[in-house]
Amino acid sequence: MSADQHPAGNGAGAQVAKRRRLQVPPVKCLDRETYLAKMKEVLSPMVQIGAMYSSLVDGIVTDPELMALPIHDHAIVRGHAVFDTCSVVNGRLYRVDIHLDRHIDSALSARIPLPFGESSEACKERMRTIIAQTVVASGFRNASVRYYTSAGPGNFGVTPDGCRPAFYVVVMGKAANVIKDEDMKGIREYTVDLPLKPGMLAKTKSNNYMLNVLTAMASKDRGGNFGILVDDEGCIAESCVLNCTFITKDRRLITPSFDKILAGTSVRKIMDVAHRLVAEGVLTAVSQEKIQVATAKECVEMLLSGGDTHLVPVTHWE
Image 1 (tube, one colour):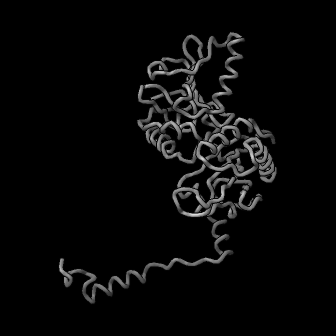
Image 2: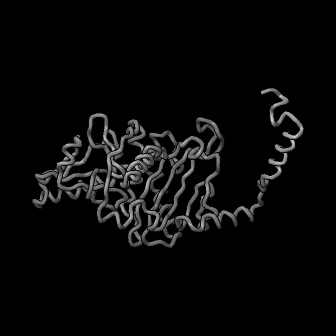
Image 3: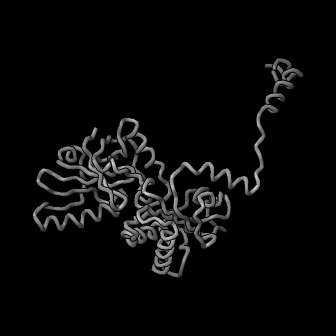
């Protein structure tokens, strides 16, 4: 098309383009009070967060509009952060130490400097204290806690040079749980055709959860919930954020080994309890092993576990 044929190349076309630009509402530059008021309005119908701690200010806030990360935090810029969870049950932290141990291992694996103390143990102690105080500030006696250790804010570069490592804690109401009460009555699941995470990301609880999200979405597209992943050997791996456990016809409890998946704290607790059930004669054995799909489908029970207190029966698979 020649210049005289192009709509913007003649006087009339230029005037039309100008009018279109003028019809677009300008983006406002907000002052602090207006911004916070708008954020409060936007966040009001969303998940209820009782309190948040940030090591950047070394303090806790309970106003949702103040619960924020700097936009140049590398948790956002590059996904260079790790997280973990624990539960608050009747006002007490449940199994927080096993989660903190995994969290610190994840941070070290991701080469994120620990934000507190001169040793892993000192950092763990400080984190535990901060988590407990944030729970108290929330006022929740039954809640979920999620905490993050990030390479921190500082720039938009690739490496975290010049960044300040950060620790964040959020305490959420029961409604924020990934697993709902109705799920505990039994769910329908589907095998999902997606790749597993590579080894390091599979074993490190990082913020890189794209494949986890797509796994759940693919299952939901078919009427499922969380999805079942299978490795390249045709063996059961895990669900999107849950471990898989089976009971065989001869009353063996079996679950996949942790060589390709995250070492879930809930399934480890299940195995501890299962060993006691073997001693009582309820089960015959407990084993972590490769489980072919055909073997899994011959089992008499299947359950997914996560979040410390959630055991989800799978009543229909495919």
